[in-house]
Length: 150
Length: 244
Image (tube, rainbow over all chains, first blue to last red; front, side, top):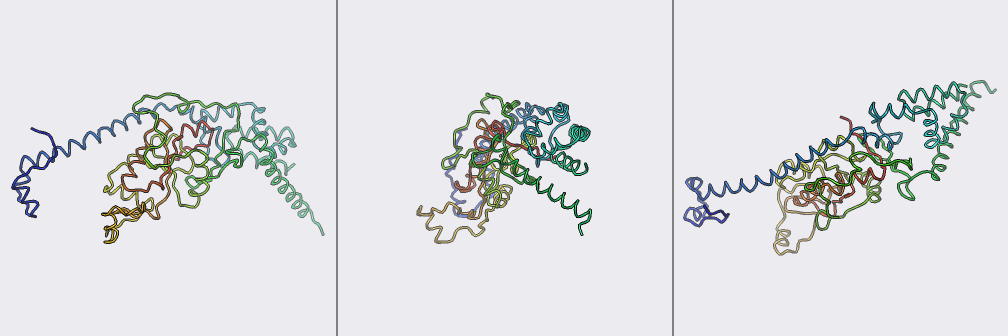
């Protein structure tokens, strides 16, 4: 069978162009060939996309949740929803009080100055709250709150 | 007569004022040790899923990127380095242009930032302000009902009557040069779109862009952020994990 999309030249085609469509035309070998070729051409395109989607699905599994969440945890600002996983969040919050104070000083100098004025007991309390998962906006509010209630 | 409550209120007001000044001073003081987005832009605020997100850089100068987006090679094909532009006439932008887009078009509603990756990629983290429209949805034929719905979402208006006689004549003569009008769609009020995916090795957003172009979307309303998630993370910029 010769492959191609050229339309057959026959009396039946002339009937179509004249506006009359005899039902027998749709059963003709030529018409069936065109139908099959149309589907055959579409199938490779769909298969190529399916294969690409499969590759993407396999590739995304390589993302290590902890590695990427670690990136997000260090890039989040105070307004970003907390995305720290238990693993990453606990690892960071298990850090020493010195690390917490360094972070506070680096990111919120004004709050750090208030924090320095607190008695030791209050500073420990603030640090404990941070270790238990409070975000920095809550920590800053707590510092002010402790300062006002001295 | 000054009562105790007046005194407390006065002290509180002074402290709040001082705190606010300190916060403002923080911003100024931080400028010396602060790592901004650009010389004149410390950060930008973007609304993502109803929440205001501060997009800034990692402030730790010793931080090094780790994880998937620190990789230097991936299997090619299909993850091959992409050309600078996915199609003729499409403008490729960098981070600085994207920051401006976030502050202007995204904020005033005339633009849309599209994460063109599949949902499984999107769920791992995205650029704040992005909506997830997988490239496969934008690669459909122009007459596909879902593609039509997408174009309408982007602000295109269907032309059920098609072009008028005059316009048809101009088209036949090759004199019609309005990129916002096709035979089926009016893109005059359509949004400016910025599409991105995983980075310079990702073909997802280029495929989406070519699909939009095939549907008649105007070239000057499509921008390609080629850097994608890889460059975004390399610069230490804020990402968000969508809520499930």
